[in-house]
Image 1 (cartoon, one colour):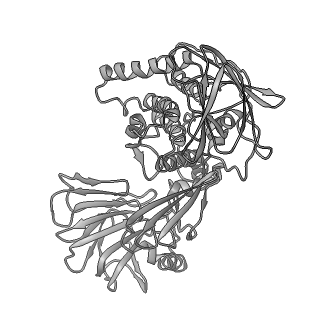
Image 2: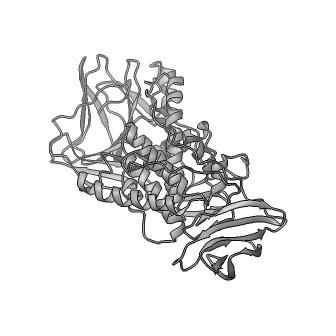
Length: 542
């Protein structure tokens, strides 16, 4: 056990046969064998700092500093050879230029430091059985060993003892509600004092406009991965900017061609570009056929290459196909889960809000693509996960700046940032930012296409002309979904229009006369925003 800039603590004997017994997004529990003065179990909680160690046969820690340590509690400080007063927490500090360590016990104990230069130990005066939590109470700040400096540090710990020394807050539930261009997520705990997730503390500095709506303490310390702060309420409520992409493909004006190129199902850029093309209203049957072919080839070939689906070996490829799958699902209105996305999200790191091992380029790339894919879903829990992934990526970009300013070891290396400009617009607040990427704007239109055909939209003196090709054997031609009333005027090759309702909106099914080109004129209400302008589908970038 070693803190950056700190002493290395050793147990009386090696920890043996430690095995993971329980793991969730909130906790991890490891169990091993019982040995004297050595922990037989470890617990980690996302909601509280440090780690917990279970000592079944007495408590003792050893370390090798040259000078004797100091032991401090709420009412005093002692040096080696003198026991503390009974207390459920004791801060161990060193005369060298190092960070202090806080030890928190299940019940009040007395600690004593014994030994000589290079061979020190801290133990309880009576045999202890129970949990001990170890943490850095003021982060990586090194304290001066003057009486005044030590006293100031003890006062800092006392001021935050309510949060530092309590048992870990337990997550009870997560509530999510939608706003016009945001999600509000509320993590409900059984008590105040849960750690504010580090990505929330950093991502705003990187330009993502999240807002914490509940009370937060000032940072109590700076750790190498971000500042440590606590919730002052039994909940953490956060507003995440994220634009909602409705079901279907948004109508956009223009006849911009999207050339169809050969797509390798194991090539991230080409699969991603195919998914982006599949989201626009002008997508024709040839492109849809290519989508279906790539989808089938990937499922078949990936099963041959790796029977597990290879999410951990090729997470970026899986993420590209999760995005392609979401581009298909957006008009199919299926309730079946996106299995590719679900498999990726199993590796979500609840501390950093990225996919596990996002220090690797494939995982970092997969995180960005998964964020974009999940944002397209109409499932609120997936959209929340999308916002969290985006916040995690933004925080990762801010982290080196944070580390450099504080003199910490800087996390180095450029990481891929796929679809960065598109994500910047998709995860923006419409009440604050109105000028967004035109491709993203084209995805957000309020008049949607639900049928699997390409639609061309042109300006018309009465509004807009929609045209498409009806092929023999198709049961219908064009299906539109609109959240407000529109006027329609059949123009070419149409028998009639069948209105119905879906998801609280009006659905219009246009029935063709025969095979060939069909067209209709639509007029939006005077108060409605004009249809967005179509643009060439952006190429893959990172």
